[in-house]
Image (tube, rainbow, N blue to C red):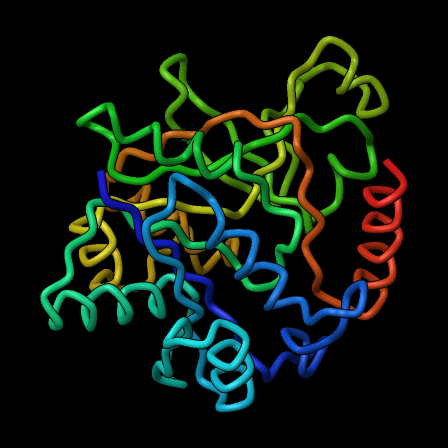
Length: 256
């Protein structure tokens, strides 16, 4: 099974302009993500997909080769950017069975997580795979910034929401975590190549527009999404404050 990892990275961010090139432990965030992913044995090729010349030049200079690709600035999501990379590589005669979408602000993504996603495609019915991790605090559970997911008994996604799901009728909210299982979605995705091309052709859906979650578009279209469990809680960097927390986490890793 041939695996392409695409790392979408935009320079223009409302909450944190220039985020991919911000320094974490003395190295840029995007270089940390690319180096970590490119060294994974389960990944055959890792490409940074960007619409900014500064990020493009930074990665290619670091890699000493074409490890970054300039993509359209019109893409509404990282998924669409991944789709462009796949199409262009296929146009050059390259073939990949699976494409993994790893955001450029996830410097703590682990090899085990990517292996879990890739292994999902041993099941021929799986078209998309993603991750979840247990929710352990009320703050996490009730924050709309944490996307929650519920699955069926086969580990397929039933729904994603910014609200706590499932709703525990007749139980005080302070007790929802007592005896209840809640999971936070970890936003790393893998696609069969044909499925990625299909989802990039879909129009925005009603549920997606309500919750502002693109994966609901895929569910509404009938795609099977496998959800694998991980205990490794990634630290995504959306703001300068998140970067400060990531710096603390990095220091803890060094001490260990």
